[in-house]
Length: 407
Ligand SMILES: [Ca+2]
Ligand SMILES: [Ca+2]
Ligand SMILES: [Ca+2]
Ligand SMILES: [Ca+2]
Image 1 (tube, helix red, strand yellow):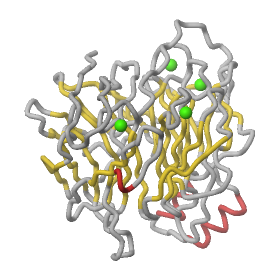
Image 2 (cartoon, protein in one colour):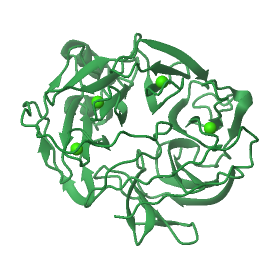
Image 3 (cartoon, helix red, strand yellow):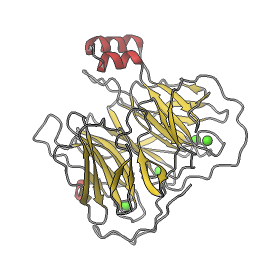
């Protein structure tokens, strides 16, 4: 299983403090065929003690994370799936969320009825189901204790170890009921417990339309913090971790516009601290007067971010909706779709100049939700959506740094 390490030179698009060497790590996942999964509710108390998993060190990004490798790439029939170490076996597992079928049917199905759906949500209290899957796609029995409830319609899952027990926890950003009247929802964190179960704790003090999320150490206290992008008001709030799974304090980092919904963190200017990249509907959603380019907001070294200290990513006509970001070497790839969420594009941006150096479009294929680094193909960095039905934008980075679609 190959892993790629590289040292990058200081990037010239910004003059900053002395550049800190950094290492890019490609997470390696595995290739499997679709695996149906069941929600699990049985306690797994038979956890065996295995060699401890090394503590993650790349605390400034959710674009690249240091993961153990899997034998093959898994595909799951779930809208949201992420990989992490959710026990002590030294291997990666998967966590997924799915919304209730009745909710999906009434909000998006051919017989959709948003008024009925909203009434049913209020009376039935629909919540997403959470399930864990092993590296082979087999359902894992993990008890999940909902001491403070859970959300409907999670939008982003970010695995990371918040309580420093060697086991990944999961930040779950939720936007809630996704039709009028858009009531909003709380976001949650699933915390690993000593008995192998996960405890669901409410992260947010107020509901919001939390569409995007990321994890990094914003305030430099070595504890991971959760970033939540609230599309209601366009604010990104940092919830500061205490290292024990608590998030007692929060601070708004920046407001970037109500039609922004995708956020990731990465050290784009190579100065040792995490920066933000935030995008969404660049055309301003329904408001054509809005100018909402995708931007990188650079950390000023003290966890402060501003538009005045940002770099704009070039827009792409016809593909103005930004979905996700991945990095390979010195290249930032921006995943896009059109205004109706049909078809897609992968935009290649040189991180030394922040100029577009390539654009690859497919108007005929369903867009993926997220791309993740997976096991390299022919030694080439490879990215994939983990869901069963959204593989058409899986790609490898060719020898000449070009995008090679796999499907
Ligand atoms: Ca594991
Ligand atoms: Ca943990
Ligand atoms: Ca922190
Ligand atoms: Ca930085």
